[in-house]
Length: 458
Image 1 (spheres, rainbow, N blue to C red):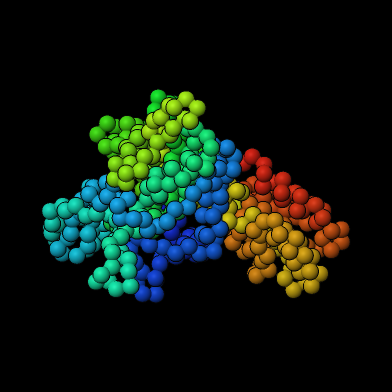
Image 2: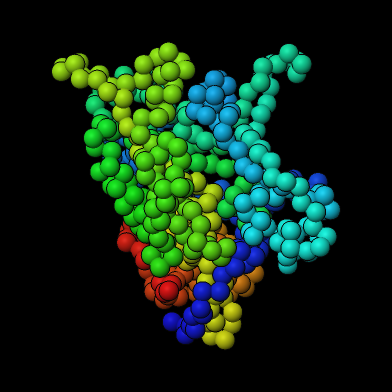
């Protein structure tokens, strides 16, 4: 095994952005036209990694439980939904405009923003800054429904997925055939007219939410709130985030939303500082009560056996697939020196990594090696996302796989031609061992299921 010299945690947002662009995780959207602020396109590895994040969430919420069902509600809902929820009247941010640089900033986040003329300064810090008074801007993106714009009906792109769950409560309750507690889980696109300080995937206009509404008897709400705070914290550590970079921060009384009796944020230590990764809120009966009043449809639980009826309280764990992926990328990023050479590696949990294994013929022009490598690749790809790579020197190919987080690499070499064994290289330890080529598939299946812990410290 090569000698390595691990370094301190030197990750910056610029390094993550550079790696994501260089290796095809994420690109600026509409880049050939100058881009569009706070919007990004996912490349091949970004799609695979984010899909893995969502799949692991669905497994934890639905597949591994018998008290939560899945839902996929529409992106455009009846506008009355957003009136009942309070979004039309109150979903706003205080914004200021700079008359000098013509940029717009959140008035309560000026210290996180960059001056349009002098990026080393915050808006308002230089004599040239000429900021307007704060004004409230609604964060919902509006659209119109209908073939003719002048006569079309106003509508909104949903700013959250939760309301689609609440308005389907009665439908799900009738089919679930069970009494609370039970939950409804949804992953879906949401849209907000965000003004951001440029922190990459942390806050974007278009994003995917992973939300679950857990409906409980009112007198059990406090207990389930604590349960879901612990459960969601454990999900992030289960997939490799370091506990030294995670914390639970309960909201102070003056931070709470008007409908919440308790909210806690699971925060991650991003390069921009401690910031929200996921929020868990005790929303009480606010949402079901509001939709009952505005729609005229009773949204309550009725026990046909006892006649008991009540409006359930709701515990809401709400996170984002994009923000979770960013945290996994930041936590996985590592730099070290291996045998005198620099190595950048993403130490992603194998269940999050976009590619599970690479198959590499040592010599790309050797027909025997290529034939065996292609055969092994075709076998493995039936069960897992794997890559075949014969482009360039073997060391360079290893480095490419390290940078996209591939946990294992199988190399076909001269010895393979002699005894049908291959070398397997571990991404994290760089340890190598020989395996019979016929046992690689079973070995990989087992390796991907083994418990994994990040080798990073601190």
